[in-house]
Image: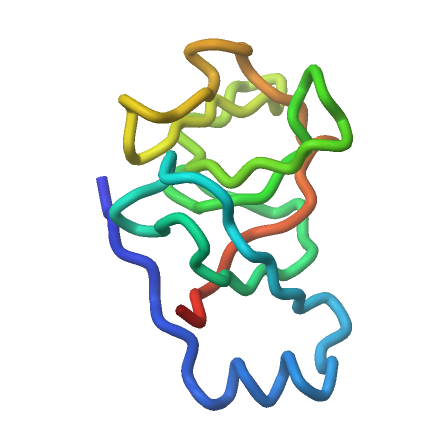
Length: 116
């Protein structure tokens, strides 16, 4: 499994600053469930999309607490479209091992890079 996440380059920063495309957003991560790829207080960039593949890092609504957003890696996509998610740091991660699969509708976006 790939544990690295691309560092944001100057083009990403310009896109974020000027809001182009409008689907690019920044998020400060809390917790180490995705360490070493993403650590506590890292700032990640994500784009709003529901098109994801196995291995992608995504932002989703927690299945039981909709106001809580979580960042996890897609492990599998089932034939019915449900996703199995896992944190890279399995010791500190609450993921599909705890809450089961999640629906495509719960996807907020795909993490593309990190600023810090």
